[in-house]
Length: 129
View (tube, one colour):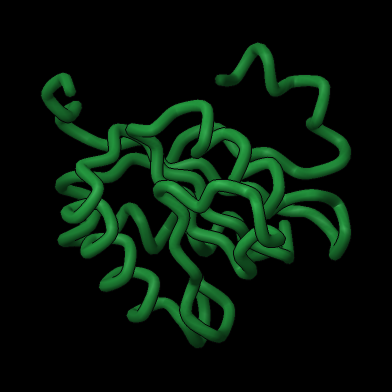
């Protein structure tokens, strides 16, 4: 595995329930073993879990902000991932989550990256990843 970048890109994947956020993140994490996915629910049986981790209860940018910071830092240490994808049900909270990633100490090693809002941005996937 190559050396991790100075700052790990973190992508927010948002969309309404049933839009495929968890499935997309699971598929990308399976295709790229050096990527980390933080999801609200693990995929169905038979789908590889790989570098997927469950998000703590609560909105990752509001009530679960500290849990996200701790969980993300721990998961990145454990997996040595080079990129992370975080599931967020509400696109309105994406900017707040990005601000959380830009605060010390996360800002030392993480960088907010392109956002995906499903289903609107599904056609962009090939260009972003």
